[in-house]
Image 1 (tube, rainbow, N blue to C red):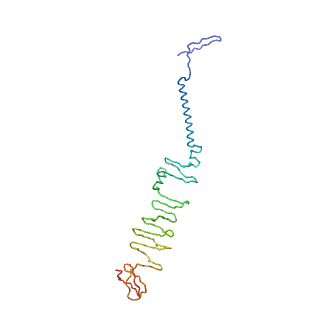
Image 2 (cartoon, helix red, strand yellow):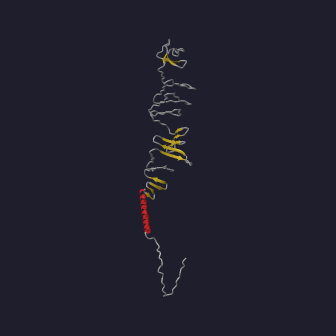
Length: 291
């Protein structure tokens, strides 16, 4: 290790310095300096390009202090103006339109709305497809604007809460099983028709069945038999005229003048036939019609 020499001299004394003293230069020189300047210039260019791209993206995406483009951030949530396209599922607590416009959900395949519980399981689903609308839920209910239940469907029954159920199809309503209702009526000036094409038609009520036609006829047609049965009462035909136009006519009685009057006779098996009226009864117990 070379030692240092400290030289002191008085004023007026001349000291000669060594001729072979080494001088070291501090800094970057040559090609290293040029490379450093080139790197700094390149970084500056990249910075300017990034700043220009950032400004261009902000301008194209319509960034503003209130939001981005048609999407605005308000105190009530997010407000989206115009049409929007979502490529992935949308999760929201509430979706509603403006006061002066309607809400439109549109898809090329189907629109599906799911309701999930805290565990992520689907508890309700509404799927609108190209061919059908499917609702998956334990109970489906439609209410009026005042909260009145209009239509309710669950696993046990279907409830119609309106004052009347109107079926406007040309074929009417088809019920594969029994129907329970307090009233069946047709539109004004329209006929009411109850029909069973291949089976029987039965109307039962614990306190009677009332059939009324205020401005028309009541007609019952059957391919086989029409049975009017009362288990605990009488069968009353209350009218000004009771017509049985196709009753068979029996033999004329020997005594008395009929004067165009006839008597209705009943066979033991319940068959009815006409017999020309006489002074006494003209019904024969062993008439050829009853045989």
